[in-house]
Image 1: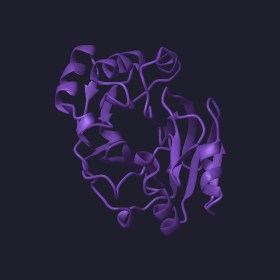
Image 2 (image 1 turned 30 degrees about the horizontal axis):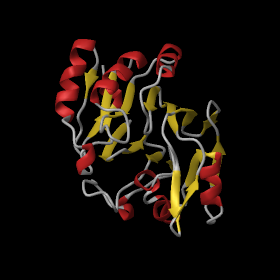
Image 3 (image 1 turned 90 degrees about the vertical axis):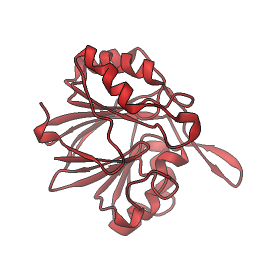
Length: 231
């Protein structure tokens, strides 16, 4: 199974049978590895409604006939635009053709601006995926919160994707604690170096994971991991 980091918080997953993309912010992302017309996806998974996460959802869904899976209010937003959606909510899980998905809490916000007005798009979320024999956790945008311990206690997480940008989300220090609480075997830092307020040193973050017994991967946009080869 191939997991490709596309920049910011966007990742693409190719199981061989299914292709998924999480938080496809590409066309407005100065560091994006690909553009929307290069993306193949059967499903689009969204953590929350901010423009740097829903970004190119409409174009990718339209080109691919992809199904959008999100928290119910965000799903309704895209359904009203004519897209095929599945709306879930925090704590809820469902087994899809590609694997099992559960939305977990995240401490953040979720809205989109329409005609100068911020429209609420439901609760922000993290995504817990059991897919192709692997357990992945994409925390979405979040502050550090103690329920991450519970997520780590109840799940054997092979790979976690955690924001380190600070300013809008937790920073590197809090993300280290989050990784420890999650008991993740591998961690990819995300949501950093896209814009000046969130500039961080991903390589240093990865180095600081080592004493915790966690393997970090500071992927550059376009780089990927073969999850079947991870120890």
